[in-house]
Length: 175
Image (cartoon, rainbow, N blue to C red; front, side):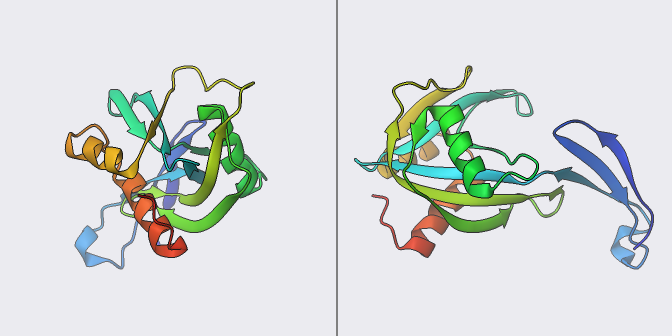
């Protein structure tokens, strides 16, 4: 391992350069990685098998994006509490139990941070809590979600992976 240094830092992420002199393909050039904190993503399923989705503006791609509820894990925050907090903050929904499915990488070629996946059934709208400002909350059956994907209105590849992983690991039929 060669020289490593932080070249840019915000409250959400940092960019780090590192040299790997022992890897000829890099030709002595540094790689750059984005370091993020851990985050959670939640697939919350209502009693009538609708998936709770959020639609919000994402400045990085300069457009509104439909996705699963997700967010960062605070310092020393328990993952399950972070998942429940993010689901409530973003959507106003609660699940009696959120099951931890596992963790995954977003883009191992450039991003260093774990995504922790949770699954909750029987999601219910909390009548006293409103969704976070700037977030539109949607519900879609798996078939309706497939239609959104085909129409290019749901482009979050990682969220599709979460759905597949939940079906494979839990054996839950989301249809």
